[in-house]
Length: 77
Image 1 (tube, rainbow, N blue to C red):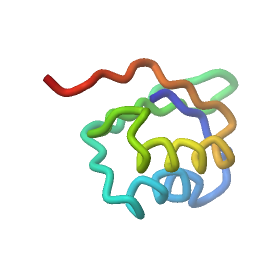
Image 2 (cartoon, rainbow, N blue to C red):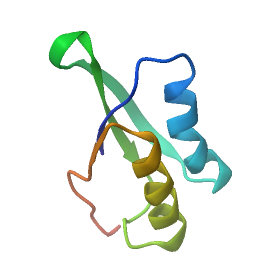
Image 3 (cartoon, rainbow, N blue to C red):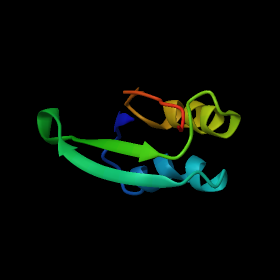
Image 4 (cartoon, helix red, strand yellow):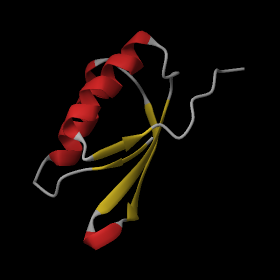
């Protein structure tokens, strides 16, 4: 995932909360410089975007993020 958040305190915590509530393991979290001094975050997680818990978490995240894009979703081998 790639996402951008508001600059208010706790916005990253609020963005990741839907994953914690559904016991979705985040395997990687990286911050990257964005435009106009805003940070973008890259997130990798265990699960496919069509899995019900992941799908529900992504729907909640869409409401909390300024920008959200699924860069790829691959089934486990």
